[in-house]
Image: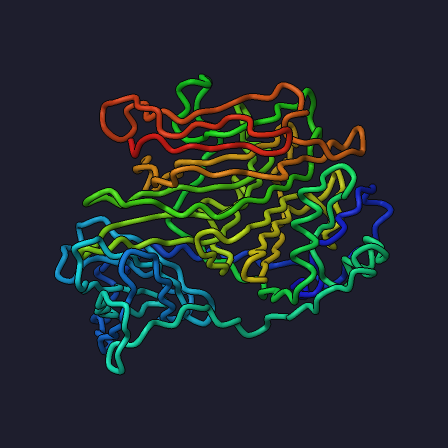
Length: 461
């Protein structure tokens, strides 16, 4: 397994022959799919669901409060109102390797308290966690304020902050060996460099590589018409040849969901990636998920970081980072060798997602195996993902900006802002009768600056 301190950093663009082979190996891909409780069969006996003691907390009125709970390692937890049928759509949360999840709760104006349940399943065990929330500005001894920060899991590494001299003088290789993230070029992309400088000027907690498969699917661009996109809004640089792009970055403020649709669960995914456009079956992507449901008079939100390599990974892979709304996120996706160096014929997809605000990050690699990386397109996308094979409602993210949006063009050995990419395609999401019979505009994307894209939500479906 790649050690935690062999981080992304320089990603020097050189041939694979010139790079030293990393004998430490690679991240072993976790492929366990957690789709909920086990299905009974004649050959097995399913243990009865246990019920944990109720936990009670006070949450503030009118704002989103993070609630950190401990469940079971790698559990899939479905949140529903107390007493609701299992047939009611649930909002699913995924615990990290030590069982922690983060839920964001914002009560409706008239709500004084809520009672919900978390039905969690992992390794053949099922536990229900009742949750009682009281809305007040004054926590009490028996209804305290909830824990708000995720504890660093075992195996995390704290990288010390870099000095001003180190940020300027350390070579790319030295930065990489110390475990720091990719350093953009200050001259060509000052916005990206400023974000990087902010990140490395404070200690960074690098989480150990750990993936949990989810029930959320990401598809390549699934139709040919730009104005009838079912799933992608954003911009795609459609290169003229194979292996045009092999590296992509983007930074953004995590959009805070405005509201939840009554009696429905909504989904959205904000990401950057390579390939997946028309005719390309491979897709290398990473970003954050923002999902929402209303249960017991309270809006509940799930914000989670993820990566996915299609077709190798059939679903979104949770990275263990739980951003808060308005956190600054840094996403870097590339193709490289086993050490993480960018190379045109690399055998690994690499993913780096950093929460600049919380000063934590995760980096993983996934072997391409038999998947051929085409490298023809680069994209920055707000997506309506798929759940259980269908297109759900799109979460109301209001608006969002993808900043420092740039891709590396291998043939010219240069980083280019998204607006400078060849055959740039603008995509907007329309419902296309995928949820209901209408064809409403759901999400649009327009140019904000040469390196920044503006996204706007229009409709759930």
